[in-house]
Image (cartoon, rainbow over all chains, first blue to last red; front, side, top):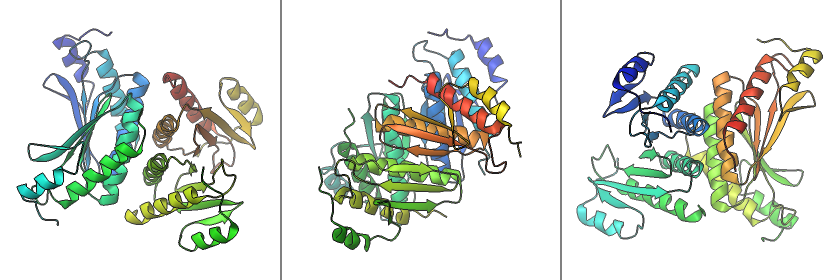
Length: 99
Length: 99
Length: 99
Length: 99
């Protein structure tokens, strides 16, 4: 189990992230896509990263967007694991030219 | 555009469905899976059915479950399209042996 | 197990199909896509149909194309199952506007 | 464009890889899975890595296996790009507990 991060650490880690914010104590993002198949492809990228880190966010796929909520059930808060996966997802967004 | 169904029609159509119910005026279901990869495979099945019907529900993937919300934005209610996709998703659940 | 079809039956069934041909005794097709993510989305559609029919073709994904080979190992030839899945895949191609 | 690697470099790079070998001048591997959905999940992982590196191998999905062929069309041989993607795919295999 990874330790729950303190508010100060969360604020600090958040500064390194561009597409994530805190909502109801979770680390959340919403990424928009031109069409449904793009959104689905990206959802599968998130599924693969989640399985790689063995940390599974809530991933919601809509017509032109994917919403992701990160939170650590076992620690009942945000942990190192949430920020590591958030970073990897952010990298995946910027690596791929989604236009 | 498909017409919004009346409450009576909704109740009638609902009787033919086993895994769907109404929540906040939407047609919703939650299907549980043994592991994440099963859930992801099923999410992709729903993505394909959605694109085939060109009707795109909200699909939420969690560790061991997929939640689906159907609603027709254009009609601001439930339509024939929602029930047709609901049926196809229900068939996909029973066609595949998800154990 | 499904019976191996005779050549005459194969020729007849083939007439109903637009995108399939016979190569080395297998039922094969190659579908081209505008980009990789389109091809991957379609591959996932084929994966779902395969699991629904519990009949698993060889699916090869390249940059802008998906190649599918159908054949029944148990019957050592083409069977009803191959043609049923071929039809479903052909329907999936035409249902979706892949431009 | 990345340069075509010399045979000596290829032999050297190959020593760091466990699941890859050379066949007909391509870098190839075949990974077996317990069932189809596992194989499909892994294929999607490869699709995401391919898009991330913008280098697209041939990925063939069968019932219980995924075969991958890496080669650089533009250089007409194996390049740094092939070995980088090979490494990432190898990491993906070991990161995930595919039992």
